[in-house]
Image (cartoon, rainbow over all chains, first blue to last red; front, side, top):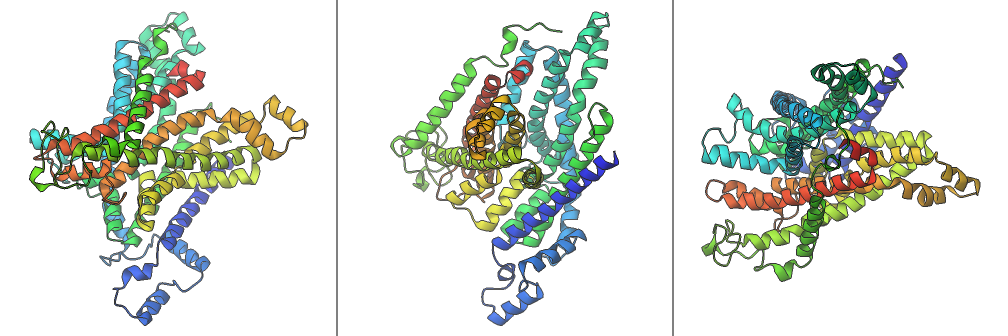
Length: 305
Length: 282
């Protein structure tokens, strides 16, 4: 057990180092940060001085170590535009992103579990076909387009929901639905295949054979075993929602990390971009790590490697 | 416990994969023949004809805020989506195939390093990674296609690695090895052909994903330059005129949705054909 934890922890840390390397390489390949900070009419001396202050005249290796050691302490430098620590900007935006991801996940789970279970238990039926058709469509609609359609319908035509904004429940409904529907389509298919797979296992047949009520078999044998693997997927979907809400946040003017990143990119405010990309990626690694461990605790059949 | 019936074999009527293939062929033909098919130059502006609704005389799908013909822009816009769908996927799958094959075949340190790279790339929210790279390196159409290919290799490597791990233990590989086949021959002639079928399925889904991501970049104004018509930028134009002209944002969205659904349906069908186990489940 200890060995397993140590191994996973080592892997997670290795991945975190890799993430910082990738971001560092991208930031250095894409141009001289000093050139972005100075006005075009700056003299060569100004330029050299700023490069020295920023440590850009040192070897790449030293630059990376400085970058990494600061990053560990959550220091990604100051925003070039606001002169506020980049980390602070990102942290301020985190609650909105978390709220949106939670809302989307709630909607996805409310749809996906009943739909997937009913479809899986009645495979081949008209309900199953309908659910699957909706899944195919739900996965095919790009989130930015469904967002626009929602706005067109609920805000422009019906005037029941605000087009954008933050702070009240009405503001959350449309962005969370746009994101949630896509996740729901993916999850329902997984729930459905899980249910179908478990329903054909010998122990389920045995339960039927010994005369248990169908309801009991479904509740205690099929669902318990079918839904276990879904836990992993839900964890990863949540992580994906945190980082994947860029477009939705932009469309609905939702003050989350994704929108901050896009704004910072258009303003060429790279410390903020680095901070948010690294923090989102690190969140993914942490969630992945936790899900992995939790899963091994709740499913004793999984061998510890 | 339901018995295995003929009807339950198909999640959708078997007509759908045929329709999906047909749909993709039509899009491909339209993209290739765009100059011949488009009634107007897609960038031709005519302010006197702006914001005409669909079915207006001369403009089947109407015009946008600058009086450009939407049908022509839609036809030309298919080019960038298809290029992304084919070229980026070809690039990403080639890189993924090579790395996945090496990781699975050699194992040990090679495997550790490639798996590490894979986990690093998987940790980034895909769209944010693409946006960051594109913002850093600029985005001509060529750059965009290459960047999408370069960052989308992970799934291929992951799937192929798992497949190679099982194929390399099979008897015919041992037999080939005992006749003195070199690593290269074993990897590319014996293992790869027997491990590659899941990648074809993945390619179909990945094309759908990359088309959406490319459209999303265009939508954010970070994609291909504005003089190239693209479905994403048409959507983004339409966003500002939603109150007065619903068709601007609706029509390109339908185009994206249809091509993505076609690719997904094709992917499902291919998976059912190549993986009998998933057919029993799906």
